[in-house]
Amino acid sequence: MNEQGPACVEERIDTTLQISRDAMISRHNEMLRSITSSVSRSAIYSGRVKEISSLEDLSGLPLTSYQDIDAAVERLGQEKCLLQTPDHIFQTSGSTGSPKRMYYSKGDALRMATDFAVICRSVGVRKEDTGWNLGGARPNVSGALLEETSELLDLQVLHTLLTRESDLMPAMRKASRLDRIDVVASAALVLYFISRSVREPDFLQSTVRDKLKRDKHLPSLLASVVARLYIKNVNPQRLGKMLAKTRLALTYAEPITGYYSDYRGAMPEARFVDVLGSTENPVLAAQMELGNKGLSLFLNAVIPELADPMEVANAKQDGKQVKGVPWTEWQKGMQGELLVTRPGDCLPLIRYPTGDMVEVIDPAHKVSLGDDGKSAVLPLIKVLGRSVDVLDFEVEDEMGCFLGNKIYTHNIHEALQRSRNIRWWELYNIKGSPGRLCFLIIPENDVTDVERFKKDVLGHLLKECDDPHHTLEIGIELGRLDLLVTKAAAYAAVQREIDKRAREGRALGQLKPKRIRTVDGEEAFQEAIAEKMQQ
Image: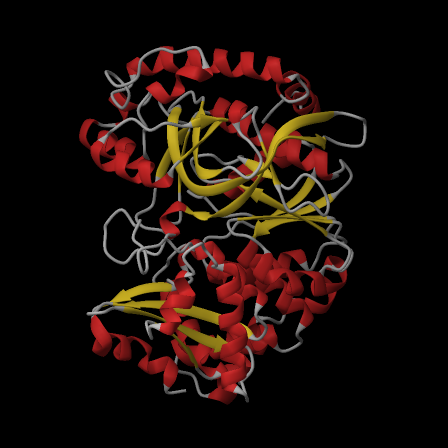
């Protein structure tokens, strides 16, 4: 698709990454001038956005959220909203609501693939490597992005793009016939399933067997026979031997923290590279250094700002201006919602709220761009969670709170991942006078000493979710926070929900049920947990 191949990647590094801070600022100022001078042709921006050519003027522009874009396209049509006819229309899975659509030209796609190729080159992908692409099939962006990236780098890659859960079996069947797999690129959840399949001899067959029993209502013996025939040409042992020698695993869609032990057991020699991106901004940041948990933010691809998430949420409703802090003014420890401005032949984004809450680890961190001495100075960030993951109990903008203070679900995730023997958790906001919170924990293995287990989990929660007001601790003392522990077998109810979503044809990103739920009173709460508590 691209005649220059690897040379295109080197040029991208030399002209947009391996440059001084002053040169990057000048580049961003020119990007702003180019973007804002062209968008008057789009009904999305016309009359709202003035031409600017300085980072200092960014806060004078309004936010443009996906809701703004979608409403304009729905009302006025693509011709009036896009700067040119799109060659690609990519779509999110819809795991956080209705699917989002984004519009790209061939040039946009090449630019995004080149940036992903920069990541690959920097972390050690070699021309002679054999890769396995487990990205999502169109309209998902990941598979197409990885296809074009492999062409840019002239790699030999097996492309087994996924739409639904059932696509994994033929993908593994094809991969088990390869001679080797040096690099694998996959959503974190997909790689977890594969890791368990190659490590646990009966996992694959039992998964298929149980699915046949539930979906086709086959008796156990017949389901076992059919499952054995279905996976006949999948060779988990051979696939496992190849993955045991895999050198690099690029993951995306969610943090790998909860899956890491399974990954490491299946791929002991692999370096895991976490990539942050979305359909709107496919290449935002990546873990460029081994052992460093921070993500290097790609300044060549986007112009980033940080803003107060409450102000962002309010601005989506009332359209008021939001004061942002451009990357040039970031300091260590600064937190906020990430806003992004980026170019686009079809649809540039201007002060687009990503929904990602981030913390600045180092505003100017030097990273290597390969083993030939090239380097770049980029902001190093940590993703804290989604801005909408402030526990939403009362208001539509999802910025509610518990006992008058915010609790972010990234803290809850961190706490429960540190607690041993947790396979699944849910958090219920039970409305009432007063209302209360209740965690429901499904353990990996049945818990013998429930009180000790609860004490350990609550200890992790109190430590991770600590705030100046000691919100969770007060909640426990007031009897407004509780923790229930059920049996390991209760996970079957979660699996049934996943299977139900798969049967409905939902994308992989939509298979997991919601963990945080609001219910109207104690009776509704008891109904919601009944199936899991009766195991």
